Length: 305
Image (cartoon, rainbow, N blue to C red; front, side):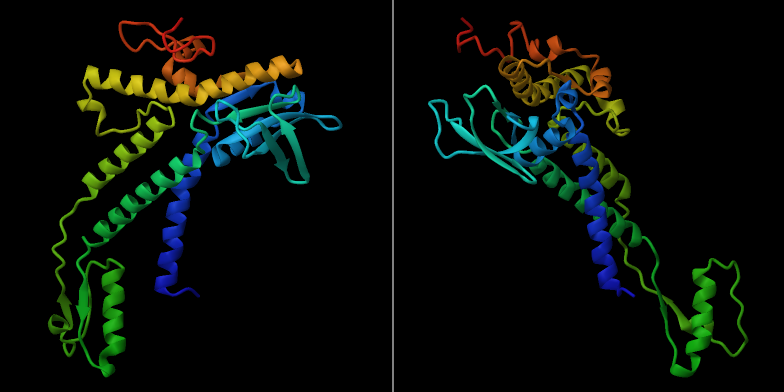
């Protein structure tokens, strides 16, 4: 049997894993690599690798065909500070490739090559912390009972407490039992903050989803107070962030199709797209003001020429 401290440690771990599991599932389900599985790769594993490592690769092995794998960039960089070679690997597979070869495409999770797992770990901890505070604050609303007695009265006092703890409407005892002196109240005077803490948890979760590129509508506290400018700002931010993940995958698809004569497409998860009513053009050509400029275009220089 676990002691009280051990059980609390288990509960803390389970609470943290609860939030991490949900955030990681969402982060790895934003995009669909249409046609990759049919070509021999594995879209689930590819998104898992980008989530965990920030980089991945698609290679065309002489014997095994198309593979989606992890990638270790070489220390040698080109003029644009990208690796000239990578080591493509997974379980039971290790092979070096040049990124200029037609049988290798180096894929970035975003322009910074940062893994999404960092975001998941950060917000899982924040959500876990708020959740634990809610539990502590809720438990503090209980009125603690102090039962006073001697060893001879222990069984009688235990029976009294069982009736109290079992929500019995009336506690019965004989006239020799001094219940008044046996039961005392310890006041904690802890203010109830549960409602404010739950609202804070929703705000943190909304922020987390925003930085994943998801417009969150789950906050019941915020919904009534949002003004038009705030809604527009949130949509703008979500579009920008979603594009950061989308454009590197889009570029990788174009390179894969060109090098390996395939027809792979990157698509936003249908549920996410339906939530925004967005299509590719709205994400890749975001209207952020008076100038309807393209967010991502390899053929343009800084001046858009």
